[in-house]
Length: 328
Ligand SMILES: *Cc1c(COP(=O)(O)O)cnc(C)c1O
Image (cartoon, rainbow, N blue to C red; front, top):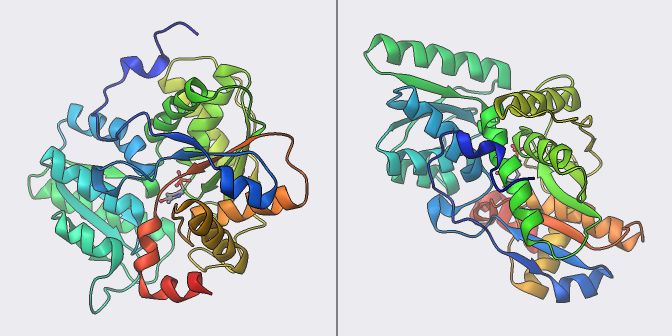
């Protein structure tokens, strides 16, 4: 590839501290018998960091270009995407409206405290699925528009094709840092933007680590692999590149009982990383992806060094319902 990269032509607001560090986990690797590297999207000062910040750099630049003054996004009550969006809106002087599933809790905990600290407004939609939550957010956007605002509505996790572009850029950031080959790249996947962006990157670089997408949520649409593949194809179109995108494959063996329900293997992986490297993962996302890596290492099925993409979210450890689970 030339020095000019396909996303250079797209508007982008700098929010993340990039590049995030790539580190070798010597003690953790020794404990599981593998060479493991970690890509630290959990670090950085902006809005407590995490993978959503990379997507927001592109989607919020687009929102600004379109003259939006209000961002509306949907999410779960403890959504990392909602919190990162609230932080970004504070920085960019935009109004932020969060449309969250579930009922309003009697007192705010975790990300909800931060959402409010960053000045976001919250609407609780009750116990509804993703499709209904999005409809609710569309209706709220319409009301805002009627009231004279210029809203910009984001999908769950900011996983629009433009959001995914953040992870195409991230893929090349990783390749630039990797010294030698890595066999596989492990990451937690839910709304699919991370996976889709990496798929485009991998198609463009025609090589690099194999993607090990570890599903941590119930599907937001019936055919999640098809949906993510199509998201990747749309991202490639935005980038105006010919990318022979492979079909998304998601490993759903590590979800356990469902989204945000901790698993024993996830909790054990979280403790092992904390006690060998003093790096924190969360029981909703990164802990389950790490559990997959640990299981594959112990089974002897890794073909060489692997990279674990730490997507953030470790603040969830302080939520009362997760705290006791991870301590075991
Ligand atoms: C949202 C999130 C993911 C999943 O990323 P998607 O792009 O939504 O698939 C993984 N880890 C953390 C901590 C997240 O907040």
